[in-house]
Length: 241
Length: 307
Image 1 (spheres, one colour):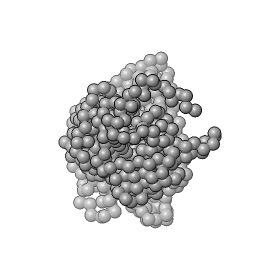
Image 2 (tube, chains in turn cyan, orange):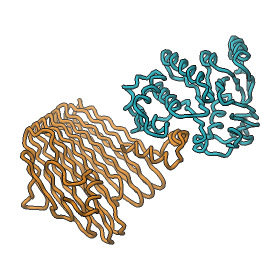
Image 3 (cartoon, rainbow over the protein chains, first blue to last red):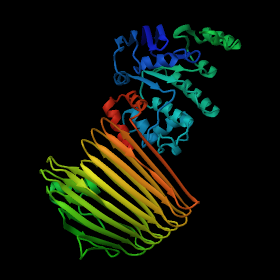
Image 4 (cartoon, rainbow over the protein chains, first blue to last red):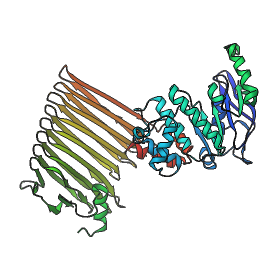
């Protein structure tokens, strides 16, 4: 179980202190499939980074299975079973897709396993195994390799930051199916930051984050209809100053 | 048989050799020939007028290899050697060179290898050269290689020059002339650390129609080390050239990259790219999210980069 207790993240900018995450309390159970959604700039990615340890909260506490991980490094959290798929993954010159998946896994991955992870994200595995994760891959390809790298790990909490971004419609359909399979296994908590209805429709729970706060939290059936209604009257967040 | 452990380690580091190789070879130690073997198609003979060897590959020789490693194990040795390669028409060979210095004394040990390649028409050459230094002594380990390449029509040459560790000072001079249809692929990989200094000057002249070259230089500079790259591609005919210098800079190191492209013909297409930068922070974070610490992540990134 992952618990965020009164977690805040402030940065000092030119216009004074900015509250990126403002006193958030959130509990994610061991086999939850949670979608975090909300307007751009609302704090979703920061929240994911706080959980992974890429950013440290300015106040509050993060507990994982009862252990206080607030001051733990990224490496220590990774070893506990937390994983994070970047929204914009970095590229690596000279590192092949197969090597990257093996690094994620922690040991050399057999070819057939590598292939199955790649197939799950809509990449034709044979073509990609020995390609380098450098600028020769398109944004969508790098993104799918990133998602595959999370699948190659044995995680307790897998966080995906906008997995749909930059992915074509065909691969996206495949990806949603893959998330469904992951969900049905019920062996890890899955936290997905997403704007996609089709991903939200798979969720157990939806959390809406805006202006650094949780605006809505509940089961999919509770929250999802409200969101659809809200998008009909779109653009209301422009008025927020 | 090679008995001595230092010799064995050096040969393994620079030429992946664990014993005397198959095919033609010449092993040079502390300025003198240690072992030599010619084959039916590849003749290696000592020069008569100066130190060094001629390596003559007969026309049409296919899938054969030549190993010519050099090791320096005595402190204070200054070794100068001339190696001339004559690669016959239509031949296809692998040449493994390399120099390893083990200096446990206080005096500088230096090896200056002057290599000349005459690559015949339609011939194919793959040349791999590794430089490596070790030894607990305070004496400098110096390697100053000079390489001249003459490529005849439609010949192909792939050169990989690698200097990963332990060489205190190096000045590399490379010149090439390419006739019509010739193709030269140069890859240079370099890592410097401590107070090491490395400079590489290169001039590739594309003299014939449809000659082409690709120069890739990848380097990592650590600690207080300094590197200078000066690759030049000169197009004297309708030709293509691509120069790419890419360096990772760490600690207090200094790197200068000066790729130069020159066209003396209006159908010459020459491109260069150069970049110097620290290891990208996102790369480090990504690998940390796999459970590595920062040091391990750095090592993986550098190893991949120089692969």
